Image (cartoon, rainbow, N blue to C red):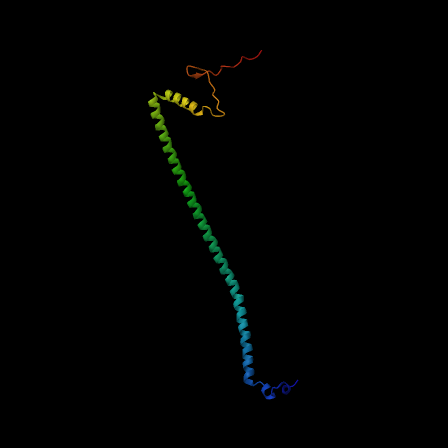
Length: 154
């Protein structure tokens, strides 16, 4: 097929020298741009990877520091709680001791208080399932441990 058949004049198909130079310049510029782009990629990716790993390392370090601070604060809270619990137990024991002392004095001494405490326990547990009362024979307030033991069989 000729240019005349296509409807294009042959004079217009000739490319001027100036246009050729522009085309060559465009091609050389494109090759240089691609080369610069490849150079940037080849230098940029490793640099970015190093930067990325540094940032990940800093983030991991800060997370570890924060976790350590949290553990220290939790341990401090547990210590404070234990100290306060101990102080509360001491105060409770002091209160119970004072109450027992007042009760023993009111009943006439420690022996009377123990007897009253025993009677009180019997009253509180009376009629409850599984309750068993065991009487121990005594002699002058001391249990007789040999009572009920059989002599060895012959």
